[in-house]
Length: 348
Image 1: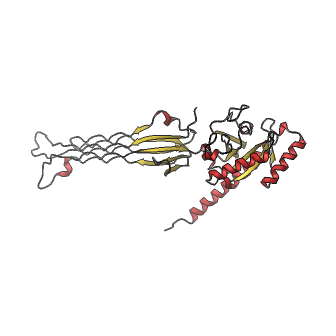
Image 2: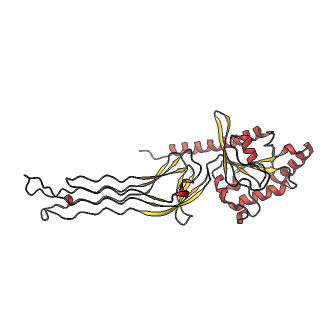
Image 3: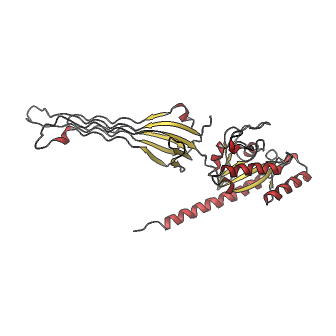
């Protein structure tokens, strides 16, 4: 399935049904009076976050969504039925933006979350509502209320516990395939990964988390070079980052500085996230080269990098355990915040 993380769509709620002008005409009921029914309410437009989706590709081929008009009222005070709603099903993590593509209207960050986007128009009153001492045979009814309409943007930010960062060919896709059941494309040329990939890491039945493989950054990405920073939005919600450095390149320190610089330039708190530093592709290094490059990274980062190889699997379990420790910290903090919010809430 093709990956699509943003789409512009047009939505419109349904018009209300018109009220009816009708009079009772039974044979033995003289001066029967008005009996026109009300029109039905127009359909609403809803958005719902559902599990099992990880792309907005459905909104690539259909951009217009219109709810149904309410049914018109009829005689004998028969009221029209409500128009059918439109429900936009989107992946968890989808944001709804205004037409300016900047103002965030909704954040669908919880499975099952449903929000009303546009309310349908009210149905018009039938002529039975306008009967009075002066006008006992009203010949008019209200038309239905017009529905609402607008253009919106849908922008997907994948929900992942851990984000993989690194230069092109740092071995992120290979590591993801070694750590999970994901099978991203792997090749020996830059920018093999053109769209984010998700992988579920299953350490045990109670130890599971999601890793997002983000397409490689290059120097100047914050200014639009290469693939730019468009896909970095997918790691904004991550608990922490795994920063992979290609151990086979000449200058590992420069590779580290490039990625850190782009994370700081992007902002949104990415540079402040907990980072697990790892020297990758150690299967191609001698013990002396491993120690030398690890020492160089430790000098600039202030912490010892972990040594891993996505090809041989060496060091992968230890790195995943370190990532799981960070995920637990974040989940524990979120649970504590939720408990505080519940205990400090309003009480009668």
